[in-house]
Length: 460
Image (cartoon, rainbow, N blue to C red; front, side):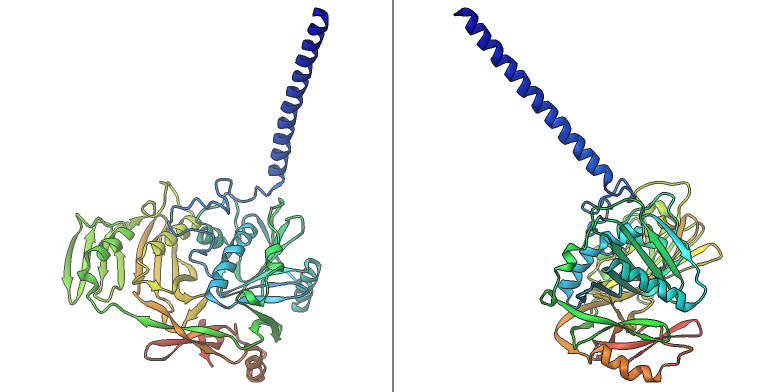
């Protein structure tokens, strides 16, 4: 009897050990599968950053914020649909969903390509589009260096990734297995191929289910002289906006002044100042910061300027181009939106180098639409390690309940293209906000030409 009990007890213990061992093996196998699956997801993105949890110190940095680079036109193209967001909410949602794709496609290698002819290049693009079937399309108001996209939109830098080309039009492809690639063209039609070597977890699933009820509208590409223009195919009503200004003296508001000083690293408690003709000028070793009664800002350096470390979260001996873009983003983000933008945003529109100085020029845009009278609203100039010059115009805009419904762009293009010069076609056919009356701006289609190295817009 005792032997039977001992045998039963031994059997129970043996079964318990087997179950425990199986459980441990199951846990270890699950961890192995998790690690293997994680390893297969793209590691091309900076390892310290995640699309789902961006580590930038800006309080407004989230997926719905494109930073200081804002696409003028965005859309999704597949075999069955070509849709673009036209409402503020839809555009904000679309920006949120497409931002990871832009960050991903600029996170890895690129190749500037050469073609024997314009037709050969166009054939290459068409074949690539046909091969992929679906893509995200982005058009920017101005040519921007490819290297500015990750720091401007993501707020971080990439190691050993350099892109030596400009971007005006961007096509992003995503395969069913999460492979990201793309092509970028500048205003002159030069093409670069973008390739992400590792697979990502991204897909076009969300875009494939988007329809017209989500604040979207149909668009098409129309052609003239080997150039393609994205145009709306139906009448779309955009919200009007109005410019407004604070009637009080900007320099009389101590809190607002302190905010401006803090933006540029001036100490509100110890900085000396003087007043001249409605302006107040603060003086430090780094230079002078002048603020007008309307809120316009002018900074000019004396000596070495404001150290870039003032705008970054780390100290460095040398600062890269990306560091300077992040510093610019920090400055723009710190400006009080009640006085600088309102329902508009300050967006990067020009990047130039001259005598080792990097000059960034900004314009006001509302929902990606350029405001005609608010171009060149801010300028930041950097040397190797400091900010040497800065301006910012205090302009604020509010969305109105009223709307303006323009004639469909496709129809306007059909009439306007009869007047185009094939040797000098328009650079773009965008929608811009132009002043109507009483500081009210309405969205109208415009033809954008290049004239003696300057852009000239002609609103309809």
